[in-house]
Amino acid sequence: MNKPWDEAFEVWRNSFLDIQAKDKDFSNLSKAWMQKAVDNKFSYQFDWMGVPIIQMPGDLVMFQEIVWKTRPDLIIETGIARGGSLIFWASMQKLCGIDGKVLGVDIDIRDHAKKAISGSQFSQQIELLQGSSTDLEVFEKVKKFASPFKKIMIALDSNHTHDHVLDELRLYADLVSPGCMLLVLDTVIDDLDVDPERPWGPGASPKSAVIEYMKSRPHQFQNLEDFEKRAVFSVAPTGFWMKI
Image (tube, rainbow, N blue to C red; front, side):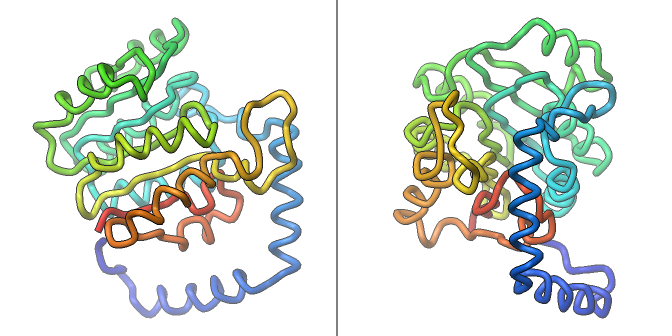
């Protein structure tokens, strides 16, 4: 990643990040707030360029830093939802002067998402692929699409069960380019109360999957914890990984 533009300021603010990280009261309050935020659907309340984006605002700031610093010319995201995240990634590439593409993969791409993306100014930059992200035929199409690109970033945000995310990691992690990021989202499920309406939960979540996967890849990826520390209210604790 690029060096900080003001090293003295970087040292100064990192000193407060260290204090913040060791502050147990702050940590406990943050966890309690995060649970309430999830219960109240806080992350559903925001749009990106007029399209719903189901993300925490602090994470979006971290995501733009990642695009700025790592400059991926292809961003692949599994899970499309309302389409706002794909538009976000494309807009970040454009703002950063990156001539790139965004590929969204989802087992069910809804008409409202298609309409939102086709009506955006980034429609020519975004490609959609319908099918399960872990279907081998779908993955072969992803690999073929990705083959001309030099700096590939992956964001996993589809089905959040342990087994599905682990299967995604076994397929998609190898596509990540050195110096680029693998984002495993909604790992925060492991830190939340059990939701009886969902097939995932603590101990069987994206976090448990990425921890299991990375045990076999200790020298291929590095967990960049400072992103989640700075975001505080992040959906991706233990979810920011750089390919070494």
